[in-house]
Length: 234
Ligand code: AMP
Image (cartoon, rainbow, N blue to C red; front, side, top):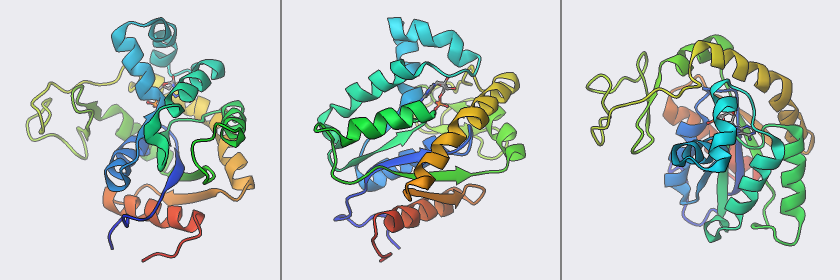
């Protein structure tokens, strides 16, 4: 099965799931398959921190502690990003919305005249047992140059600490410690579950099993997306 036929318009897709389920990895694959951009609020915030912007300074300590950045700030970031012209065929939201207030803001924004796509936003949640997630998070290493992700336990680079693709020294995100992970799980359980209920309640929600191999998860997301768009699998 080809993952994405060329005439399939994916529209706006939200990838949901706890920290470490593989949202970023799957988003990168889907970006290449569908030719639509990934919009990761976490990535936009990390770029702002690296560039030392006012937004970055505001977000830095909250992020390192695994706490959420406030809704108005992230909504504003998403508003600006959705004004760019590359979102017309769709986009993948990764890590946003994370609160019910963000989901309500986004629905209202997309329903307004300046909506970017005629297709409604649909959500796919990736499920993984919490016990697996800690290993995934604390073992995660990222290439600062190409942003690809490794895991020292399950998917190590060929040379320890070095990116296979460009030779850059891999880094660990400051919020990938066990302590920050626990805080991030608390935030997820308290706030992001309401986002799942929100999209489930509107019939715009599917769940996939994230404990399978990466390619199988991608195929499951593709099937879920076609179902949500009312299309048959080819
Ligand atoms: P992520 O890369 O998606 O795991 O996000 C890393 C961190 O950025 C989170 O733990 C939050 O501190 C912050 N963040 C990213 N997206 C959001 C959001 N939608 N709402 C609030 N905080 C966010």
